[in-house]
Every structure is written in C-alpha cells, then in structure tokens.
Image (cartoon, rainbow, N blue to C red; front, side, top):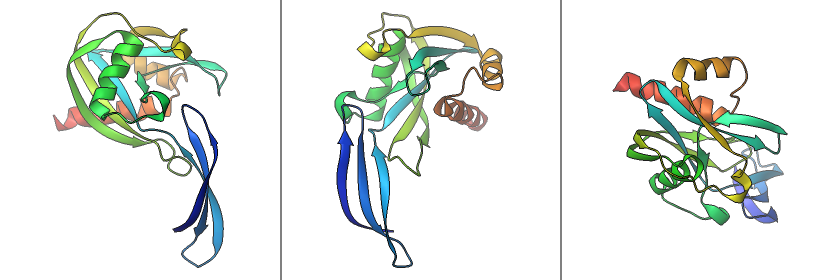
Length: 177
C-alpha cells in the first residue's frame, strides 16, 4: 500500500487521528483512518506468586477494570521504554523495582492504530507513594495470586487485552528462563 497524502483530522493531549489517501496494490485508490498514540509501557509487578494490578474507571467502556500498570509519556511525548516503565510503575502503584526486564512487544490494534507497547517484568519490589495523574485519582491497587489473576481473566473481571497478552508473554519468558 502506498501513502499518497495525509491529513490530521483530530488531536488532543493523548492521541491524534489522521486520514491517509492510499493506493492499493491493484492500483485502486482509497482512504485509511489511523489513530496515532505514543508507544506505551506495561509493567508486570511480580513478587513470588503474586502480581500487582491497578483498577480504574475506563471511560470508553463505562466500567472499572483491573489491569497491569501501563501508560504513555505525557502530552504525546516520547520517552525511552525502560524509563517509561519505571515511571508508570511508580506513578500508578508507588512501587519501585530492583529489576526491570523487557520481555515482550505488543501491537494494540494494528488495523487502526500505530501504538505499540513494551512489556516489562518488575521484581525486587519496594513500596512507596504513588504519583497519579488527575485522570487516575480513583485508581485502586491490589496484590493477587497468579491463580486468582487467571480466574479473574476466566470470569471476565480482567478483560484488558494488553494485560492478558502480557501475561502470556510472561509465561513464555518463564519457559525460556
């Protein structure tokens, strides 16, 4: 597919939407809508058999959801993935990690968004004060055993695709180790 032109049709502090004029392989022209969001970091805080999750209201769903700590740099900025992981973990949970290892890469919705996510495994955790953003003021956190977390997935309490895929990456990482 060839891009013939592009125009931004919407932007805010978290994302932009663009419409691209494209030419397909068969020579026909069309348009493609793309949501551009900065890459994010997702952190799996692991202490023995326990994972640390955050729960917050997800406005587009109108629901509170449990998930792993994750996020992007402020104002659609760029930040090195490992620095972003450290920032998100501290910001959302107050935890700091003695070890932060990248274990995977996720494409959120490659048919409509350019956003990608790096998955980090955080161990050697120390508790501290969180530093949440305004949108995260109602966030709760909790420790769950891995079997509890897996049951939460099975029961539909955890539906965040990135968290579920990151957990699969964790399982594969542990197999390789």
